[in-house]
Image 1 (cartoon, rainbow, N blue to C red):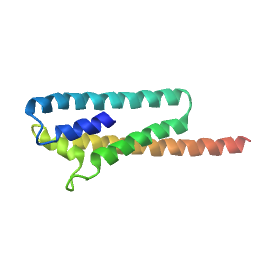
Image 2 (image 1 turned 90 degrees about the horizontal axis):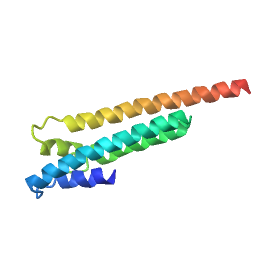
Image 3 (image 1 turned 90 degrees about the vertical axis):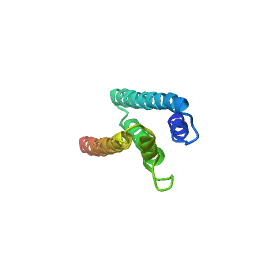
Length: 128
C-alpha cells in the first residue's frame, strides 16, 4: 500500500520526467493489481477457514486505504485518484471511477458480511 502511495505522489509530481512518469505509471498499475489480488486471496482464505471477522477486517482495511489515501481530497481540494487521472493521457476519470467503485463494492460486502455474522450469532444462541 505504501508503494502505491509513494508511486502516486511521484507520478503526479510536475517535476517528474516523462520517461520516469511512464515507468512509474506501469509500477503503479502493477502495485494496484497485486494489492487487489492479495486482498482477494486473503478473503478467499479466511472464508474457507470460516474466519468471518478476518474477512471483514481485510475488506475494511482495503476500503480505508482506498478512501483515505486515494479518494480523500487532501491536495488543494482534489484527491490523489483525481490527480492520477489528470496526469494520465485522455483525462477519462478511469482511475477515480475504479477507486470509487472498489470502495462502494467493499462497503456492500462488509455490510453483507456483518449481517450474516449477526444472523449466524442469533441462530447459534437459539440452538443453545
